[in-house]
Length: 162
Image 1 (cartoon, rainbow, N blue to C red):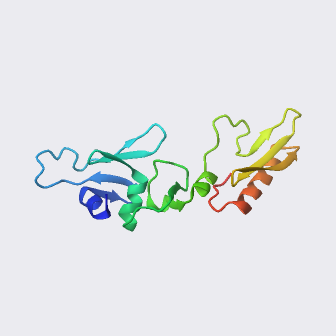
Image 2: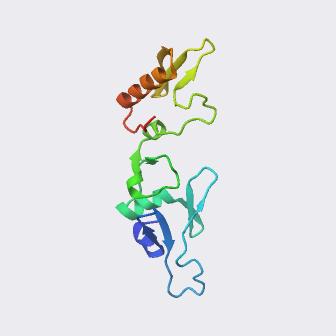
Image 3: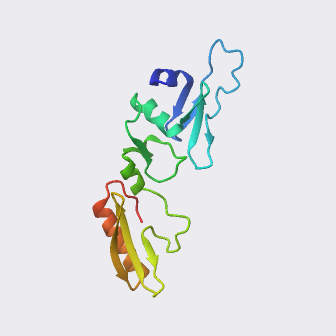
């Protein structure tokens, strides 16, 4: 897939980040023309099938806008995997992309890297380069959250807000 082929098949609605199928002259059935392309997957990403091959919509947006395939991963800045507007997408290494992950489903504190010890104190940690860095124990959840947030802002290049 190249940008010219993509643009011959789809139009990007930059306001929504969605692709719309173009009418194709000479094709007997143009039942997709004018319809939104793609389908949301279980993991939240949008797939678009072109010539029997699946493509991730956010990678196609990058190709459509910049004319080449992204050299690395694409990070959704606001963590919404369906929001494929170009201003919500940025290049990221795997490590940078991991810095902007959503909160784990089993997290009970409501904040990434903050947890409650059985002694009643709140602990904080951060992971960088696959190494967990312990940030200490704190009397309140807010103290632990603030320490974790400060560490995140100073260590990460692609960090989202806590």
